[in-house]
Image 1 (cartoon, protein in one colour):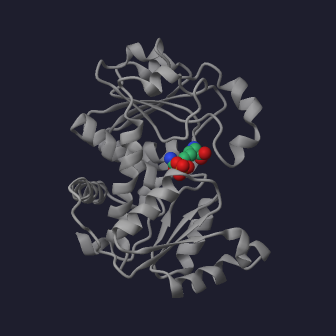
Image 2 (cartoon, rainbow, N blue to C red; image 1 turned 30 degrees about the vertical axis):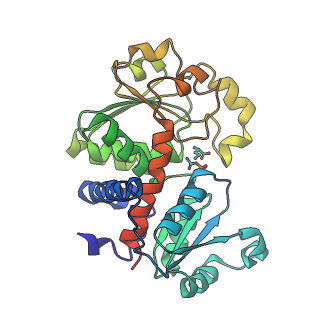
Image 3 (spheres, protein in one colour; image 1 turned 135 degrees about the horizontal axis):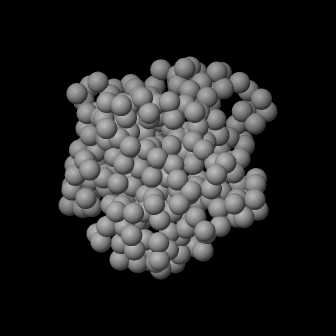
Length: 312
Ligand code: CP
Ligand code: NVA
């Protein structure tokens, strides 16, 4: 199984089977145990990995840098503004040059087609650190967190509120592959990307997943095992229409009243950064159901798993 990952790109979870994703989580759990026990795990000694980020990042950037340091590899932060990319050098040339220096490239950018283009021109693996369409590294940490707190992969209901963008799409992909029930609360006029919808409805036919959209937050949260909130105005397109978003999404919030309908032992998740008073209240993110910092920690372990599995 392990060698099957070698050299593979990690652009979207749609490219992986349930068994492969479970193997990544098992590997991440092992790294978590090593890390907790201070057992050295420097399996990527001497390797060099580029981090090319075209959008801001705290968790993804720092967790990848820390993961690479723990694994004995060297992270190189690549600033696109000082590269010839900023003067119009084509991606296909940049990619082939970087491929000669790096063992893998981690990219955060806008279009999914950008990471796909790097992957097309590089032999070494390209890892998607967030595009507008998907955030597979977040999806893996989310799945690991659900597994740890719920103790199972099956029979999970997620009530989701927030932008239907990268994080939501990756959670929809996970939900479809693992047969979850996922209710997405959103005002009318906001819908998922067609590429994601086509995939999740197709996969759900075989896995029994049930992915629904509703304009009623209470319906989404009813009997939920997981309440998941995300910003109303993601980086990129949505943040340009922030004022409109604040109006349209007002009320689409996880708060003390509407989370009462969830299961007694529900967990509250958020990819972060979060905006108190918008998609959730301070009481919810600081409350006893919140696992958001455990979830953020799991970014480190799942990224170590991906790096150590795909780098040849
Ligand atoms: N959740 C997440 O990807 O956070 P950053 O934008 O800080 O990396
Ligand atoms: N959906 C958010 C996630 C940030 C990690 C965004 O794209 O801004």
